Length: 103
Length: 167
Image (cartoon, rainbow over all chains, first blue to last red; front, side, top):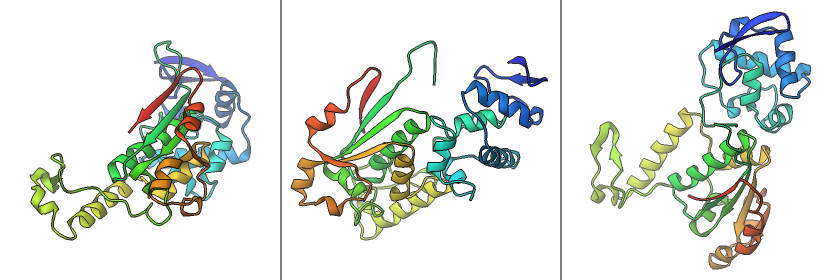
């Protein structure tokens, strides 16, 4: 585990760069984390991030199918928002652990 | 995904030749898992695997209850092959397996294929097997990209860090 200052806040990260404590997250951190992945976040991105954070807080197992049925975006849209890692990158930017699901 | 400094996998070409739940889902899970991780995926369905992309059959695939020594009744009780031969047992077991998968958010075959193509994965059918089973392109799921010969499929399997997987 390492500590890093992102957007003025000190956060704990694991070896893969995922935030260890979801409560340390804020929008500015998300913008910075997204930049590291080469992405610019829109309101739509934030809707997905908020959904993921809420699901994580409720201890739900996340899948792209679940996000696709959330009403925010369909699976195709999710791939467009987070290319190359619809669940991996979105979780990372949302400040929640790397999803442990195979779907 | 980068691991131990190795150069990461870029493309998987998956061949599915069997039409049971376990064979088809192994293919679908691996293909979907690839596109979710940013790995290109091309899936080639041949022989009985064609059932998974044939409109009339795709959501009716079953698992065989005969000749499968790993088949056990709930609670780990033995499941003799002779039981599996009784009418309705195969259908019942298959329904049970599908409901277990649904609980884990694993979708039906058609929806699973849609998830794969939504992520840029490509689905192909084998020409030779289609001729054998007297199938036409119209019999296939609409998003099947093309009907290919084996040579045409191999031509898509080039490039560094590409793997061919036979499920």
